[in-house]
Image (cartoon, rainbow, N blue to C red; front, side, top):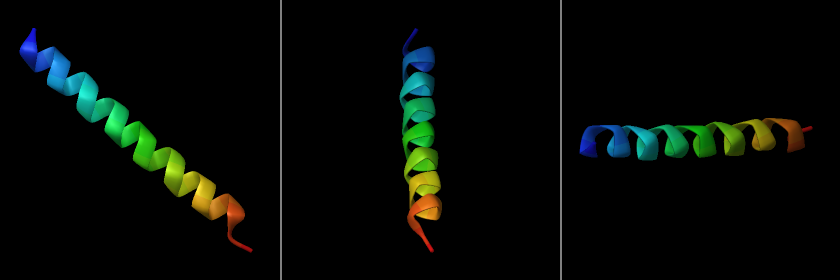
Length: 29
């Protein structure tokens, strides 16, 4: 259970990083 939990945390962190990266690209001229 703990393994799945840490996996979810990592997944959400990765998703957040990807989102910020995409937003940065979109805002760039």
